[in-house]
Image 1 (cartoon, rainbow, N blue to C red):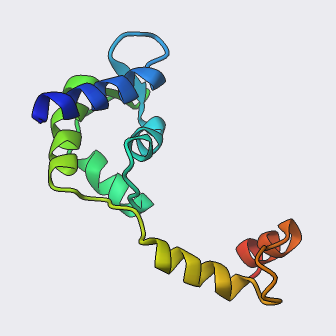
Image 2 (image 1 turned 90 degrees about the horizontal axis):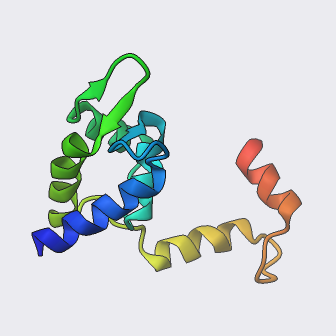
Length: 114
């Protein structure tokens, strides 16, 4: 199981390893974590990064530092997705006209003004 998880993490990491040198920009870590089916908040991403040694200058993360931290997070099932019924309830709250969809304009209004 651990070997499978590590392989999955390594494959996700390599997608963002543009130089093929086992490092990624620290700003890519949230995307990598989310591509693994985890949905942490930004605060949780920062908490995870605090456990990982980041190479200075430039802010790069090495696979060898990322792998054990992310393996542990996946094994402990951290950062699970929000349940579908909660997402549906949120959608219904935004669908004021009860028409089954939200217009782009309404979504922009909710995300930027309310």
